[in-house]
Image 1 (cartoon, helix red, strand yellow):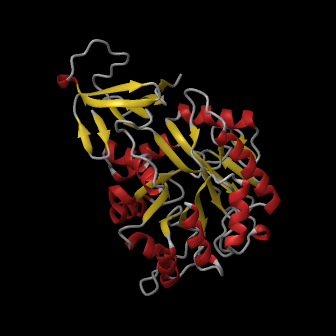
Image 2: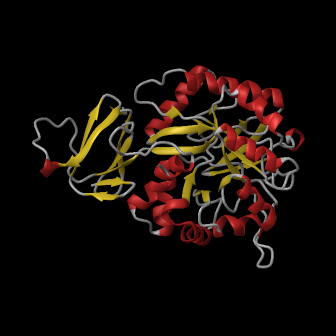
Image 3: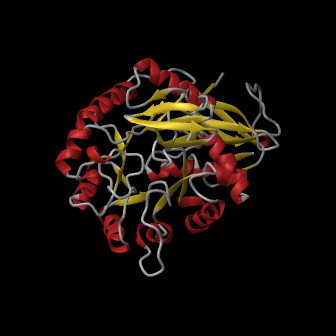
Length: 373
């Protein structure tokens, strides 16, 4: 089977020309002369796209060298992630500028065959609420302004695709509008926004909500706040960390029912400690402690996750009893659509896809037409 944005195609045939999909048809419609890869009982799905990613295998995107980014790209590819957005954490402004320049240099270089590709940058901070900053450094949070966003944009060589922002901050609405003019998608998060402030942010250009439930004003039946708006607004995307710790199973199911299969997005918020033993690690300038699948700061605050998107998909299937094609959509097609990127798994698209076996276990990954070793 082939899980496409428009539905399920039985007995599919995918023809690849170089790095792109040339044609999608069925076996019965083709005179088959040669097959390079055959998965008779498999399901082909779009490659994963992690839009909220800080690091993996000891490499942090805030200070990774070119070699470090290549290690990141290899690690993500082995987890079925074909694209990702390296994501900043709040730091001194000059540190952030330097990090953005390094990320941009990596993005501008040609990716190695069979490795995940950085498709832009996500800036998470410095435009966050002090009250809901989570692991982000309070002393380095800044008020948003179009002028400051321009500085970040220039440091990133125009590669910023996503910005998390608290819409209640002074200057936020003007900055959101300016971000939209630059082609940056805005997501509301790390926020104490009221219902009215969240709606004002949406009217200014916000299209999504960052790690729903986490680092948000709590829901109240008389003042639903940012969380109530995120769950209620039909056209708004909302992403979520499905690692079994950040969000309770009941809340995961509530989120999925509220947003549906076309507006829900799975993210990881993955830190450099992912894939490493229990211990103490650095994320940006923050010390984090990893024990099992839980990552916390010195003060006990949850500090991102140590899972990859393949595990998030598996967790969602178990928690919400989601069908494979629906769960995978949340980690691939939906984030691409939210960012306004071209359609996946279609003729002309980049040949990025995963292959699941009859038991729903991911077995293979193809990135830009190449089988990942």
